[in-house]
Amino acid sequence: MKIDARILIVEPDKAGLKNLKRAMEKKQGYRVTAVPAAARALKLIEEQEFDVVVTRLRMEKVDGARLLEKSRQLHPDTEVIVITAYPSIPSAVDMVKKGAFDFIAQPFQPEDITKTVAAALEKVMSRRESAQLTYQVERFEGKVRIMTRDSVVQGLLETARQIAPTDCNVLITGESGTGKELFARYIHYVSHRAEGPFLDINCSAFTEELLSDELFGHEQGAYAGAASIKKGLIEAASGGTLYLDEITEMPSALQVRLLRVIQEKELLRLGGTSPVDVDVRIIAATNRDIHKAAREKRFRDDLYYRLNVVSLHIPPLSERREDIPLLSQYFLKKYSSSMNKDVGEVSPAVLGLLMNYDFPGNVRELENIIERGVALAGGRAIELVHLPQDFRELNIRTFRRKEGRLPSLEEQEVSYIQWVLKEAGGNKTAAARTLGIDRVSLWRKIKKYGIEAD
Ligand SMILES: Nc1ncnc2c1ncn2[C@@H]1O[C@H](COP(=O)(O)OP(=O)(O)OP(=O)(O)O)[C@@H](O)[C@H]1O
Ligand SMILES: [Mg+2]
Image (tube, rainbow, N blue to C red):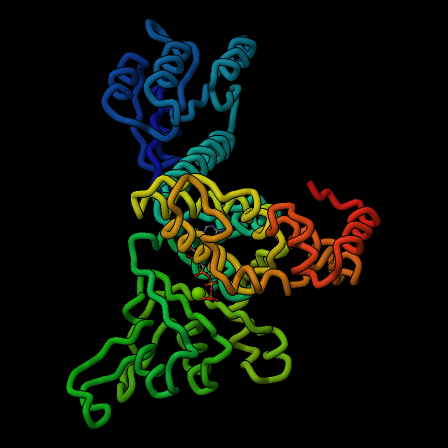
C-alpha cells in the first residue's frame, strides 16, 4: 500500500542524498524533499509540515541537533531520524532522549533507512488516526450520550468505539428500552460515516410488500400506481448507516435480498433490471433471541452470520442497578432544562422505589418516569406523589430478584412492611390497618425482623 507521506532529507553528501531520495521516492512512493544543508531545512520546516525528517547529525554551521530542536518545537507530530557516523553514537543517543524517533549509524543499507522511516510513519499515522477519533468522539458526544457506571456496558462502549471506524455490520441485542438504538447512533457518529445519513426502520411495523418498498424502492411503473422512481432506505442510507430494528420480524424473502445487498454491495429496485451500487453499514437490532431463531430456521442463518460480525448485548437495567441513580440524575437535568424548571433531585423515598423496581421497560421507562416527575414537581425534588399511581402499585407486586433468585416469603414480607410503614409516615396504627393485622402482631413482626420503624 502506498502511503501519501511527506519526507524531508537533509544530507550534505551529494551522492548519499541522491541515493536516499531515490530509494524513498521510487520504492516507497513517498513525496521527498532533499536538501544538502540544515539551514535550508530550517527554512522549509518553518513553512510546511513534514511527516518525517531524516537528517545527518554532524553538519557545518547548523547541525542536526538544532534542526531536531526546532522541528520538535514547531511540529511535535513530525518524527525525526538522525544519521550519524560511528564516533558520535553517544550524541545520537542523546538526540533520541531529546525526542528523535531513532538514529541510524553509518555504514547502513538503504533498507535500514526505509524501514526506520516506515516505522516512524506508522507512528505518525496512528497518532493522527487516534487524534481524529478523539475529535469525532468529542464532536458527537453532544448528540449521543451513553451514561453508565456498569462495567459490562462500559465494555460495550469500548467495543463500539473500536469497531466504529471499520465497516463491519453490527448486531445489537437487548430488551426493549435498553438503549439499542442509542448504541447504533453512537457507532454511526464515531465512524467515518458520521457525515452521512443515519436512517432507521422497524421491520415489524410493515407488511412484507410495504417493507420491501421502503427498503429497496421501485422503478417507475414497477406496479400500478408506481408513478415515479422511489429510492429505498438502503439506497438512501448509502455513505451512512442503516439501523434495522426488530430484524427477526423481516420476512424471509426480504432476508434473501438483504443478504445479497451485504454480499454484493448492490441492489435491484422493484421492477429494476440493472443493479444500483450501495455503500451502507448495517446495524441490526432485536429484543428476541435471534440466535435461537437462526438455529430453528425461523431466521436465515447465512444472514445471521453476516449481521453478527460484531454483536453487542445490552443488559437490562435491573441487572445494572448502579445506573439507576446516574440515569435519574441525567434525565433530571435533561428535562429540568428543557422544561425550564429547577428539579434537581428525586426524594430518598422515590429513589428507594426506583432502586427496587424491575423496570420491564428498562431505561426508556425510567426516562418516562423522570420526565413525568419533572413536569409535575412543584419544588426541587420529585416526590412519591409525582410518580404514576400504577407504578407505585406495580412496584409492590414486583418481586425483585436477588443474585438471580426470587425472594422468600419472609423477605417479601419484610420489605412490604417497611414500605407500608414508610407510606404511613411511621404511624403504626395506620400501617397495621393497611396490612390488615392488629397493632400487636405488627409490633411482633417489627421486633422479629429488626425493622426500623421510627
Ligand atoms: N445509557 C444510557 N444513557 C442515556 N440514555 C439512555 C441510555 N440508554 C438508553 N437511553 C435512553 O433511553 C431511551 C430508550 O433507548 P433506545 O431507544 O435506544 O432503546 P431500544 O433498545 O432501541 O428500545 P426498543 O427495543 O424499544 O426499540 C432513549 O431515549 C435513550 O436515549
Ligand atoms: Mg429502538
